[in-house]
Image (cartoon, rainbow, N blue to C red; front, side):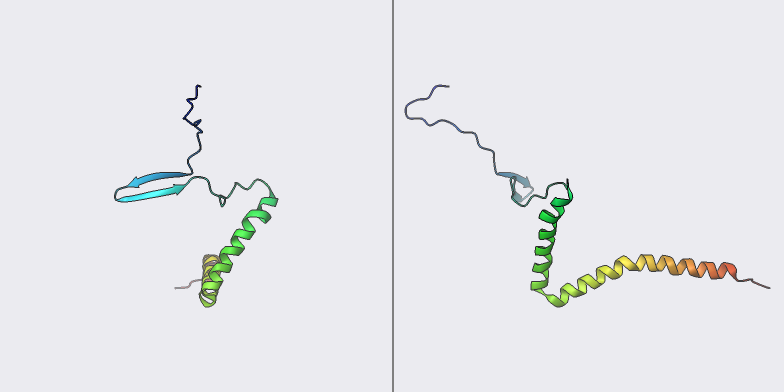
Length: 104
């Protein structure tokens, strides 16, 4: 590589942004971010990476609207329990129906 007296050495740097065109939309995507979630390799990553991120996200949602935050938590809990309870009660109903003797 020869350098001319007035030229500077060319340093290749990694592009931090990539551009993508989707129709009329132009997206600029950050390639190198400090907030990338690594794959969970060890339990220590859960305590050092994921728990603080979830805590921050839930704290932000609570700060925006405490009442709405509580409603969202309750509806998600109900949604998680609803299918299980429906299966349980359907099972009990079918059990009692099967034990009944029908006489004509």
